[in-house]
Image (tube, one colour):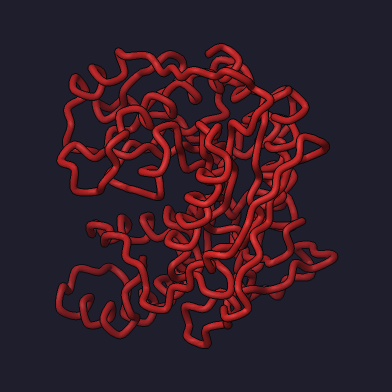
Amino acid sequence: MALPVCSFLLFLLLQNTNPLNILEQAALFSLALTLPEAGMETFWESYQLESPPETVSSDANPPSSDTSITWTSSSSVQASLAVSSSLSSVSSPSSAAAMLTPIPDTISSRSIAPENRGVILSQTFTAIDSPIYIQYGQGKIKNSTNLTNAQAEEILDIPFSMTVEDLSEPLVLIYHTHATEAYEPLDAEVYDKTYNWRSTDNENNMVAVGAVVAQRLEEAGIGVIHITQQHDYPSYNGAYDNSAETVRQALEQYPSIQVILDIHRDAIQQDADTIIKAVAEIDGKKAAQLMLVAPCDDDGSLGVPGWQSNLRFSAALQDTLETMYPGLCRPVFFCYRKYNMDLCPNGALIEVGSHGNTLEEAKYTAELLANALTVLLKGQ
């Protein structure tokens, strides 16, 4: 999802469309490379450029075919795929190993050098009064496609539904294409600009968030598989290729799975020194706002034949979430993105908060997400 820096700088020089000097842009671009898909999109949008299509690097390392997934109905269900030892760390700048920094044991605004301090702004995102948004129940959908709202609404007029014979069988698959994404270590108004919000410690990254969802679903009697594999480590490039292979193996091993959730965190950058915490107050407690991503493949070019079902699922889940917890969700992002959603008609990519949020806020949102998903699935 990134262009080589040298090509990017040449592109800027040729375009001559930038309000910042080239060195400042290079610094911003370097930061964008360490962030998830939405962070990159934000960067491109800030220059009013079209986000480049997702590509898979030639150094992608898919898991070996001899991996296996195990499932048990007791305690919190997790599955970890053993990756072949042939995988080795990539020494290029795209290697995730080069981007990881340890989470400090203690941190405060006073411990951050003045030159490294950035600003964290808290914001509760809501849909503005614009024809780009579609109302669906208590939620809203941001229509970033070529479809008219009327055409999208025709799809949504058919309600989400699926047949569930046994809720206790593996029904939901949770995985993380970008497992090493992490959060701010402290709820504060400043951050350390040398920190990159990545961690290989599964107690402090997206795996920890997915574990909360999995545990809550299981406690509600819903069968769940939680894949803890770090598909973006040691190489960030090719992560979607790696996770797609994992999902295919899980679906083959557990054909009862009908819902797949790829849980990420977003990255919202206002400028080089300011990041945004996407936050909502639910029952007097801070929660990280979440956003569901739904694909559009109206011309068939993405290869997502069940995209209408994906849209209905995301819209129904958001409606349930907003009915139970008003303000928790940002509008569904309905767009031309694939993100492995071709593998399941009831799949969604979920952004839980941003890099300005804390892990505690994200875990609280994970509890609320599991509650709403339980209501939705038990209603089928």
